Figure 1: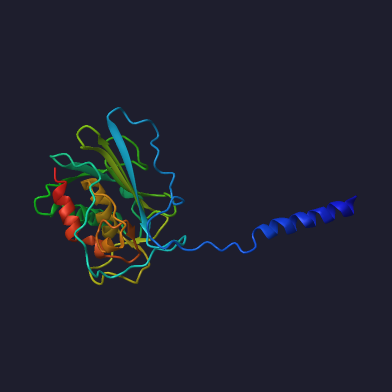
Figure 2: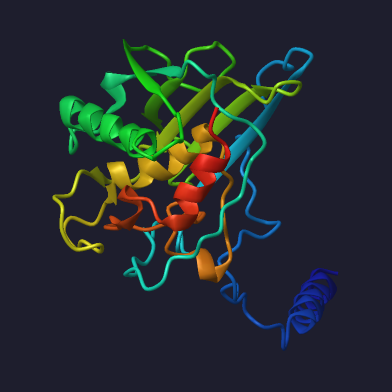
Length: 262
């Protein structure tokens, strides 16, 4: 009886193995656009939103499809004039934000991190006729995104495939932003690089102002772009380690900011 069971087990293994003969290995997607299998469990609010309010979540992805890879930085070639509007805008009087200083990585430092974030917000404020106003409101102890009307910026352990995540909650009737949070992924190394080449090699880390300017574009009311012709725009949906080109805005980014001005 034991011999029969042993033979039966071998036959089962052989049958299962035969099912996979000739099955190709998974290939890297031809496009950088996220597929259906690249979803993150970061989108559901803890409690239902009140009537008349909607939520949208933006996940900034690295320009790579390998876990732990910071993405491949590329120099600017030609920047398009494209932009996408997300469906909301900031209040006319501006928006106040707060930083959880205790979460800023030691490699950056709380003061340097604060200054980098202020500079990132100022990049959007400087757009002529945009009217975007960001007011620093001090520190906060917020450690995760939730509807609390504290517009928090912080570092936290979010999904490993995300560089950063921005949550936007807005009033559907008016399109005015009600509550917004941006969380940078503390799983990855961060730095504030000196001004210089668009692709820095040392250290291997994400540049705070480079990623922050992109994230704050969502606060303004701009959507992600994924077409290859838009890869040099700040609102392109992918980032990379050592990348600095998103610190400044290109024509499409500026056009978008002006189009959605409060």
